[in-house]
Figure 1: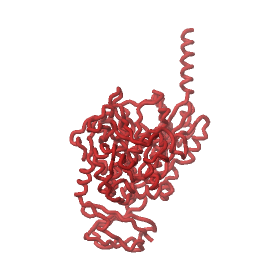
Figure 2: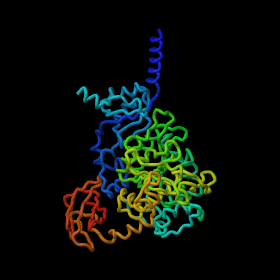
Figure 3: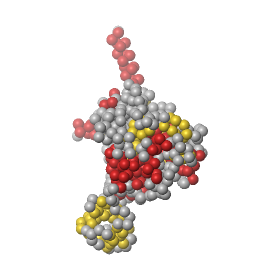
Figure 4: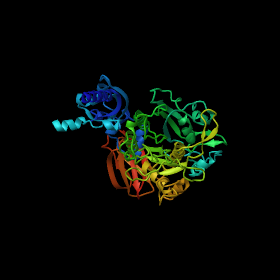
Length: 538
């Protein structure tokens, strides 16, 4: 009798667990229309995004191709399944339903590669593929020399010598940035963002949480974050990139902490990449959730486990610099960085106070696989932001703010050296930091010095716009190079980032008669230095 009762209770609990709603990621095997999209890149990316890839020699690939619409629709039309988000980079959709219904997708559709439940204890299901095996560019923008009165923001700007970049004329002009956060209330009305609005620097945005085009809503956190990059109150407050242009994306649901926010973040990052964004700031991080079954462990902080970190890594491979906060857990039982701060190619920022002493709350590295994190530090304790209600500067705390302080400076630095790759930019900043030779678990490489980084690079002569000219442009047969240099090496790159022609020791002209009509990039190299010039083949 007791055994029967126990069995009955266990059965009830099992059935209840199997019927409750779960979150999961469904990964697809392929993208059947990939070749069509790759032959028409503007059908999936803006020209600015394509130009950035070309400048950085990053070829387009299947990760840039949208999810196959038929796969999406078939899963969407499955009874009991709700699609919450999607990611072309990971070729996956975020679904919600019972464990039974989600598990059933693998057997219903042979185009599914695998399923990962947010609840780690449920990831015992065999993927569809395993069942089968068993059974069978930037242009160089430079503004006027600018000597701002930073007011109360002086310490956070001058600590990393971002003011030096501004005086050299690099204030973010021509750089496109995205801020992925929890909301941007009052950005459309506060006088601190009037400079952005007057100069049409807010390029757009989207609320992924509510699937709404109104992005001037949500939690005030994003407004405060944006102010540290782009806020401007004359003689009172200046952000680190006051002349950059912005997309504002909401992915954080301030009322809840769920794995869906990771998926929404990846959607926003994909949108940013497709729009040609150069630098993304994300002052968000994930380790624990409302449902503890979804929680990450420190061992998961390896840059390869969390969905958001995998997405960030792919985003970085597209040539975008992702700047993110390390986390505010330094004096808690979980003291380590969060996701996506653990991703190898993400630029992770810790926090110090105004005297450059580490903030106790700044999260520790290293990653679970032993990599140095955070990368560098910026002012984040008693740092100034523009209050979203009063519109006046006020103090706040968190790596949420050291990250945008750094992100703005990164954009200005890349503006100064547009021919450098995203990875080179980050490395030069690390090398300028005060602990580069002896990083620690909480300091990383320390506080960087953008003046030092700038002066170091400026001593390495780079070809400028006057070193090479090409003509005629457009061209039919021969493209001539007018230069002060002899015997240069040239490469021609198409808009897919593919090298279609390479020649060495060229003194005058390049035969392009065999090229198809269209836009190309001529890359000219001399002594390891490069210049790229766009030309049109008729």
